[in-house]
Every structure is written in C-alpha cells, then in structure tokens.
Length: 385
Length: 142
Image 1 (cartoon, rainbow over the protein chains, first blue to last red):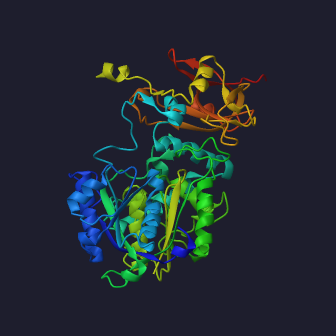
Image 2 (cartoon, one colour):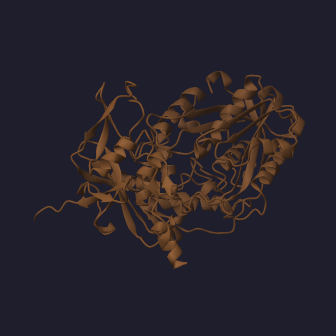
Image 3 (cartoon, rainbow over the protein chains, first blue to last red):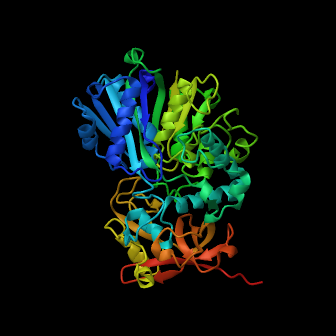
C-alpha cells in the first residue's frame, strides 16, 4: 500500500467471539458470528458487504461465510498468505480494495479451534515432512517453539539476554490481560517468579514464552474513508499498512540466513512503514507487537527501530512497555495472554486503542501500531483517529 | 499401547526432485552445498534454479565437514510421539568452516554444548533412502 492510500480507508467495525479452550462450535460458525458482530458494530448489513478477505491458514472457506452470513453482493475476494505474517496484510488488502473503488465495504475474518481442534503446537505422527521441514523435523525440531528456541538462544549468545529480561514481556502482557474480561488469562495472575520457576520445554523457552492455544474468531469491516464518517461507529483510519518479505526467507526457520537475531523481513517492513507513514517510532503511542514467542517481541522491536539491535532486553524494562509506560505494548494481553487468533486479535485491540475503548486504555492515542509475525513474510498497520 | 507408541516411525524427509541430489550426498556420507555451474555461487538450502543467475545447471561442493556450534535447542517436552522417550535431546545448528549452517543431532549431552564448540559432520544411515546428520564433538588433546 503506497502513500497515496494514506487515510483513504477506515476500520468501521470489529467483532469477536469469546476466546476459550473449547468453543463447542464449528470454525465456520465462529467465523459467521464474528462477521455478524463486526457488521453490527459498524451499523452495516450483510447486503452492504461486497468484498471478503481471509488468511491462507483459515480452514473456513469464504463460501461458508457467504452462505452463513448471507452475503449476497460479494464482488471481490482475496486470501492473504503466510499465516501469522498475514493479519495486517489483510488490512492493507482491504484498504486497497475500498480506496481503489473496487469495493464499498470489505469484511475480513479469522476463525480457529486451535485448542480443541488442530493444535499448531503439537504434532501428530506425521511420517514425512516436505522440503525445508525435512531438513530439521527428523532431528526433533517439529513445532514453532522448537524452531524459535534456536533464535532465542542466539539472543543470549550475542546480546547476553537473560530470562529475567524476557520475563518482562509475559508478565506485562498478563497484567494487561488481567484487566481484560475477554482474555483467556483474565483471572490468572503471572508473577516474575512464576516465570522464572516455570519448567523449560524447548530450552531456553518456558511455557510462558509461548502464545496460547485458543478457540475463537475475530472479524473487522473496512470502508472508504469518505463513507466512514456517516456510520455509527467511531472510524479508525488506516494511516499506513505495509507488507514485506525478504530474500532469502525460510518459513519461520531462518537459521540459514546471515543472522538469527535480525529479521531481514522485519527490518524491511520497518523501513517501509516509516517511509510510507511519514512517522518515526517515537510517534507511536501504543503498539501490538506479534507475540507468538516472548523473545521475538524483543527482536521485532529492534528490527522496527524502537531501540538499537541487542538492546531490547533493557528497553522493555523499567515499566517502559506497561500500559502507563512510554511505549505500552499488547494492551489486551496479546497472543501470550488474551488469546491466539493467529495475530488477528491484535488488530482489534489496535482499533480499540484509537477508539478509546481498551481495558488498558492509553491516553490520547493518535497513532496505534499493529504488527504481524517475525520470521515469515509479514505486515504491519498504523491506525489513527 | 506401549507397543503402539514405540512402533510410530521417526519423522523423515520427503525427498523431492529439486533436492534428491543433496540427499544422495548424505547417503554417500558427503555434506554438500549447491554450486552454480554458470556463476559459481554456492547456496544452501538448494534451489531449483540459481537465484543469482537463474541457471538450472548446478553442481555440488563437498564441505570438509568441520564446523562450530552456532546455536542449539534442548527439547525437554516432546512434540512428536517418536521423540517421547528421547527427551531431553539436543539439536544443534552448526556453522561449517565454509560458511553454511546445518541442523543435526549430536553425540553429546546437552550440558556439554556451548557456542563455538568444534564439531565434525557424522552420518546416521536410517534406511535405504535417508541418511541424517549426526555431528560429533571434536576432542582436542590436552
């Protein structure tokens, strides 16, 4: 998305199901519920929607959403690839669809029974693994936590990162979740000592470094900026939305590149973000940084330019990322403590911060940043009032 | 139940046409990097065309086998049934002296591992098609 599209589109509706360990409903139904909630929030009807977007990892086909919600006017559709790298890319896509005039209103959704159904963090007895996965799976690096531990260890080697520093991420995000009734971890406290005492699962990572496994769905609605003001919700403008890959890039298993502690895709994303937005990291009032694993939040902050390479461990200390700090992060609890809707719930919290409706509301938010997955072709969006 | 658990096979690679020559190297106990015949660039993992000059004609450069531990993971909770009775097990990322990195198992306890530990490539024959990398710690005298 280029500079010409700045503030040409707005998120006018957000919707979500509850986040749980067992939804008791199909992913198709969850998707439909989230879409209907987003339309209700915007004050739009299914007939107003003429574009639909989802993520490549979504098992709910757009056909099922069309048929369940009764979307009679769909004339454009897109699916954005790269799993956890996709969420903010769907916002870029939606913005392009409405700003170009191709669509009037676009709905985007992500639905998954990731706890009661297929769990990304465990593996069935799959006999063989394709292509690059075959280069590491036979040795027992099978799931994302095991891959990420290799990168996290390298932070310790290169920068002297400590688990005491890493603890700041899950403990801060948990405190945010404790204020958020929607969060899976709303009623579960997490202390620094709990983190330090936790069993190590894929050394050097413990369970609190891992995102949750969640059943649930979220959706949002985008319209062109000139229509947004007439709707009943407070419009949240898409200031800038960008995507970035890198060369080479390896399916979150980036140990064949020059560095394990710099994500060239995230560096490129940051460069595009600041150039196209006309902003600097210091302009960001609140951020939702994709937190599949706690140490990768640190690497993302460095790659995006919030602090220098290797210094994020210190940067996140001293309350800087708390909801009253200089750079509040993941104010709904993030993927670590609110729920894991594959990064899409971060978009909803980014919207709430601009609306002023977060349960950990930051004062006078002008620019709200949301990012997607480190280590894959990824994306980011800056939302503004 | 126990029999079922132990009967589950080790996860193995799918050897596809773009990478069968690399896996054939492992079967011969040779660790290879792809080398473009036209522009001589070396890459790993292998690709179907040279990403620098787009030539489909590639050869292979045999690495000497020496390298250093670049990073490692010790898996303490298994995610795949075959590894259930193998935990805790270390997996290493080794940077070879020629500059390429490879994942492999290693013949030492997790406690021995440190950054820069000298290792050499070893080979573990699994079946007729698959040989895996199993690094060996280089014992230095003294």
